[in-house]
Length: 282
Image 1 (cartoon, helix red, strand yellow):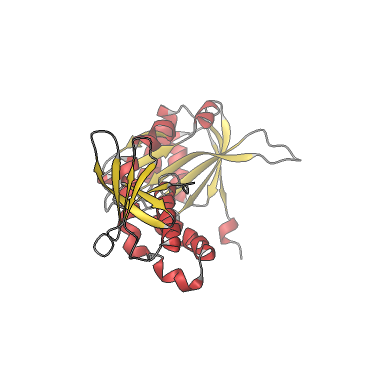
Image 2 (cartoon, rainbow, N blue to C red; image 1 turned 135 degrees about the vertical axis):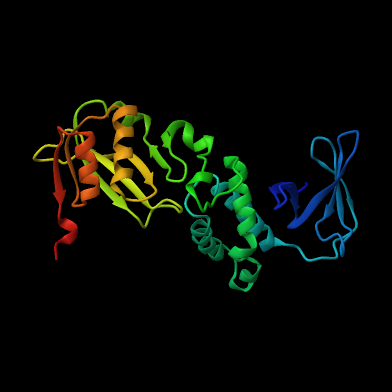
């Protein structure tokens, strides 16, 4: 009985056949639908397999003169898996690589760790996979002018994009958009560490949804990327939220930063605004 044939996608995006721990690349497809597969080490090994149109082995030619690639196969499957993961998980690619690098090292003997590609040798492959999935020509930008949110990410989450050299991006889920129409109590929080370059700040608005004395229910509802933290930028943002989303701020609390407080006052003059000093407490 023939052992099971497996297929993986190689770094060029084509199928590689795995059989008895040896790897084969397709050499030819005949008119009948049958295919010829040759050992990936074809310069030093002339072994080949012939498959009929159903994928069943019909002929094996010569004995391999190269060594089987048991752990190399595991590593190549790992690389193929990484290419899929970076298209589903949008954390920094190097962070994903390092996380899964630890996992693959636990699967194979230490003596075979030299086969695992270091990040700089696989980096371009992973970036190409993500760019192809997102249908964009670049993943890193020097200026916000060149940024275009991929359709696969934007159609459900991006709700507004404004400006060029000082672009603002506003994101919200469908659920969030449904609860933003009523006057509410909002809390603002910005972080600079999490802002992807070239944006300066990742700025989030939280909404109090029916909190009680016994239970606090404050949830993030609007996510924004800002080019700076000037009063002008905050004013642009809150005008967008008022005009495009129809939000009404009843009460507003933020870090004691006058730029955003003044911006909220100018756009929502009826709002009750308080600053939070917790970041300045010893």
